[in-house]
Structure formats: C-alpha cells, structure tokens
Length: 124
Image (cartoon, rainbow, N blue to C red; front, side):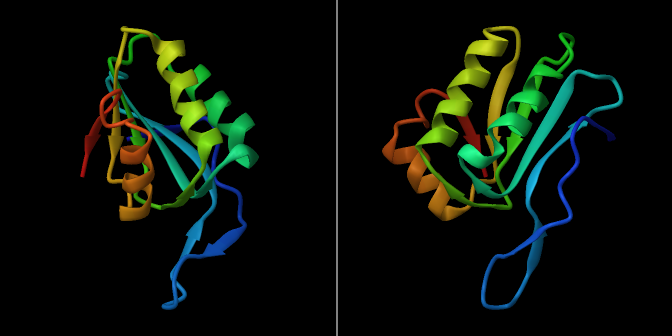
C-alpha cells in the first residue's frame, strides 16, 4: 500500500487499562493500482477531525472504486462523525463503493442505532 494524504499526529490517546497507545487522527492509504483507498480514523471520530477527514476524502482519486473507512482504532463516534460519513457518501456518489471496516463494538452500536447499517456496507 502507498500512503498518501494526511498522517496521524504524534499525539497519543490511552485506549484501555492495558495502556495500549494508538495514534489519533486520520490517515489515508491507496492501493498500488489506485482502485482502492483506505481512510483510517484513530481515536475519537468527532468534530475535531472534520478538516482532516474532509481533506482525506476530497483527495481520493476518481479511479478509486472502493473506499474503506477503517474504524478498528476508533474508540468514540458522535453525530458529527455520522454527518461526515454522509458527506463522504454525497461526495463520491455512486462512483465508488463505501465500506465501513472493523468498527469496534461501541462504534458498531452507534452505527446500528442511527440505521447506518442500511446506508453503508459494514464489514467486521
């Protein structure tokens, strides 16, 4: 995978009592053929990362047919994150398939309550 776009800040957020430290922010990776793009959100997916999330999806090349939103390191999601996902969906239209990948149980619950499992494909 070729890493493009924004990289995660050097700030770390304590995820659990085992002190597992994960980078906070948004990173973007594009496959070598450019058809698949992965946007990873680590830490809190809320209004504070709006600018970096928007920059990550507006930089996705038109030849990308699959956009993976990796939520495996996302520990919190609020309504602004749901809005950002809808903005992404509107931005790419039908040109690309959007997959929400590996959401944590808490994030999956938020997505389910908001009926986003009916709007997006969710893959564990």
